[in-house]
Image (cartoon, rainbow, N blue to C red):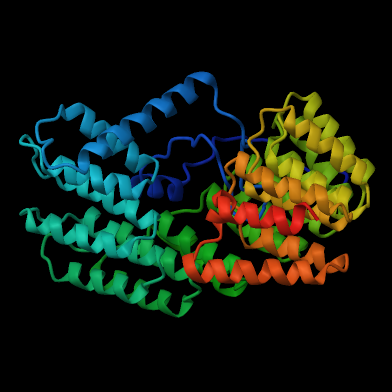
Length: 501
């Protein structure tokens, strides 16, 4: 197979194009998780990243919206009945569908209420699979105590937990950072003859160790797997490689990759490809990234759109803008269509570099190609215009967003509030903060820190101190900043002290 190196004038890849192997890590998590339905309103975390929202944050089509509303109504109707003990002869389909929908949407409190109602039905039969689904949901929602209680109820009903149920409980503790408890569950599994931990259990454990940077435990887990005769799968190796790469432990990453290549039970796939080049690209080691880009092709792997997005981001961070152009040309030549993520990365790159003209050019190209900008796109544009002092362009973006079907999220409000605060338009900043209530967006610590900084920057130190004291007091009482924007008393206090002045 022929392979060509990367250059700013010629970005090539093997002429023998084969279908990329299945990403086993994706398959693994599908097996351990419940599929999510798209939410009506997406509120992203405060940490923005161009590749976190691959297809844009858009309003749902009318049919989808109708389905969501019906689902919510069904869940709420069943949940209301769950509060009464007299409903024990309900139609099975209604209860089971409401439970399934609550699990899919990770509404753990509703799901547990509906499950309790299910257990009170005269036709109820305990099933291990239902418990496993609930355990997985509780893990995602970081509710290990609820998961542990549910596991006990499962056993009290005479069910023998399966390997999947135990693995779900391990994940519940692992997601919450309670590795000691997770290891303890695995030890319990080893003492049960027909419930030994399998490769999925250990892969989950390795994943949590990597996320928590407990790399000292990886050797112990691998040794235990070897002792029990559990072979590492492609998922297992990918988990370790990805963890080492993100931690910039490149020697360990390459050693694990060599072990994977030499293994009889697994081989590198597209996830491995992207993890390795992404690790070197993110750390600015462009030569290493390009070297492995070619090495993986020699192994018979073909790059995908995500691979090119990684290259573009890495070249952007390194200031190699000609190579970004070369990647885009190569994608066009090989019939790879850039995605919204691709353009978001490029727009963010040129925006951070202060090249407004180039950023605008790619933004126009994106729209001409029929791609809908999303909240991440607009955040990148707002940040760039704000830094360049082009507040009029920020006004234009705000109008575009208001006239589009983009669902505005908390990070977007944070960006736009920061832009007007930096420009000294405190009144506009406050108006936007109050608009969060209308959009049902919860402010976070970044929202309030941004506003306090704006007040301080423009000599309004007393206002900044008052706001900070109020936030600290309310947070101590409730432990939650998000409800502030929905609190009428806080809104009234805020308007009196910051808006009417």
